[in-house]
Image (tube, rainbow, N blue to C red; front, side, top):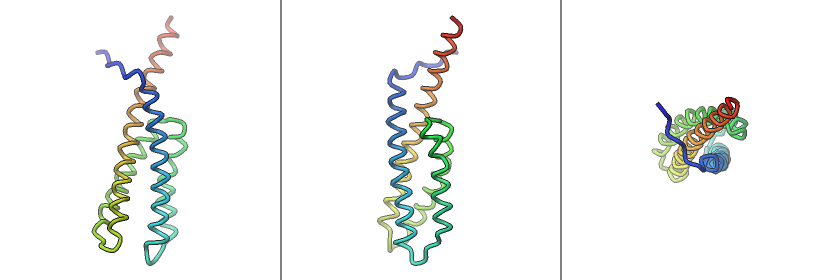
Amino acid sequence: MKLSTPHPHVQQHAQQARLFTLALLLVLVVSIAVDHFYLRDISHWQVWLLQTTLLCVNIPGILQSRARSAIWLCFLLMFYFLLYIDRCAEPLHRGIYIFMSLLVLTLFTSTMLFARWQAQADRVANTTTQESCDS
């Protein structure tokens, strides 16, 4: 069974999605800091540190264009999405939590596309390398 050939610009799409993912990740980390230090009555810096560390652990892998790091980030983002959907029920800061929910959803989609396109680009690169070694 032959795999379908990927789009010729798959590496370019992967790079654009990677940059968009990194930018959205930065916005999410800043939003989490605003949430913890400006919107809440009691700020627990330990919780903020844990939340941001979990997100930032994947940054080196994404900077190196590793699809596996993006997959792990998608897994983590599901929990953040559930957290902010739950917080949308709070009437006082509903707007910021709706924004953060949409931000996480957009980040999840961008990261998923990056993982898919990067995996396709890696597959093409491995196939090309094997064909050149066989020749």
